[in-house]
Length: 332
Ligand code: ATP
Ligand code: MG
Figure (cartoon, rainbow, N blue to C red):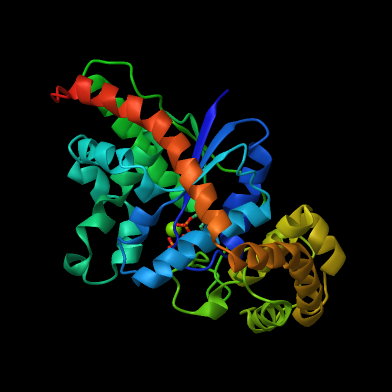
């Protein structure tokens, strides 16, 4: 069976973009692939995280994944720092990947802000750790949102360079799996920016922990333009906020965007937003209550993650040993 690796940063609340662009797809994929799902806490600290929040978010993101339908008995679910081989392979990749490759990564540019010299070295080297996350399991497929496509290409380049530098056919070249109607859910405040956990404004996103009133308020306040909804998809060009909300409606209801427009063409946003609210609440409400139930006693989540880490270690350790032999490290 082919193997999937995918990760989420415990940097804050899971949001609608994570759900539609990632987690919901993973729930479907788990029937056809062996899946490894990771709370990437080591990625999270590339930007400052309050330790108490990091711990809480690690558990909450795991709860969100289980609540959304990831089968933690069948699949491997764990937090990255419990499996040392991620960091160990990342160091090797720091010596394989080139500075020029990392310089092209747009996420670094977005996240580092204006003063790049003040960004952490970890934020810069982030893609090498991500390559290690995937390749330490020799994963063949990586389901991600569109924002991670560039990092995945770098992982492929790194795998290929490692293989050719050492004259081995060791790492598979992982394939991205990018699908679903919501590959890139945009911010509610700016239709040209992606919805993110790390966006300062809570009104930019719907969190999976938001209750019905909060969801309603955020959708009501979501930026739109003064025009009514258009009749065709072409009518959404250069209307990023409208396009985003229609895309979200389509993804949540498993419809094509065209079908959504057929229903709402010519109607004002207020009416569309009311229906979108009802839809979002009906999809997210049950996940939200299950998350709350799981978080009431985190010992269950902790046990799941611990067990997952043991299983992940069992796969990763022998692969790391092979890498060390290939590189020429003396081992006990
Ligand atoms: P951060 O702002 O801390 O980077 P994030 O919101 O980007 O958080 P990640 O943990 O980096 O979330 O990504 C988890 C998964 O969710 C990845 O597979 C990523 O591609 C996907 N994802 C993140 N944001 C979106 C979005 N706006 N639309 C679709 N998919 C997304
Ligand atoms: Mg991200």
